[in-house]
Image (tube, rainbow, N blue to C red; front, side):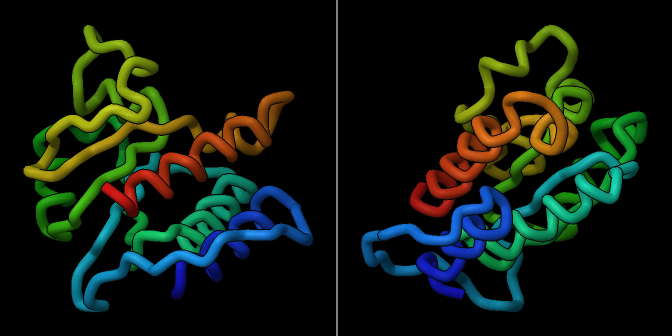
Length: 156
């Protein structure tokens, strides 16, 4: 999938925009046999969160994307094993609870949005709760921020 296609999908399916003028860019993809990006998400998701996650995975400029659902109470070591088995280039963690399960409760979640840290020998980033991107007054703002994150991940 090209970057243009991914961006158009995200803008149409996630943000609800029908027409946009976009600059032409080269896609940043890797072999289908590898995982470029893992979306690390809570095991229990609502139907709206599932749908949003699927749209985001399809539209992500960095492909292929693997969604890994984990129980936040599973523990850091078990989550690390699961991520290492996939051997992704990068990991994007959705939500504060998963972030704290990995980084510990002393770290400020919001300090790590758009900041890289190491987890499972992989470049890892924190992102907003999927629930917050489905419900509330800041839905579009949060979706745009996550879209910017995904674009940055594909260029880093």
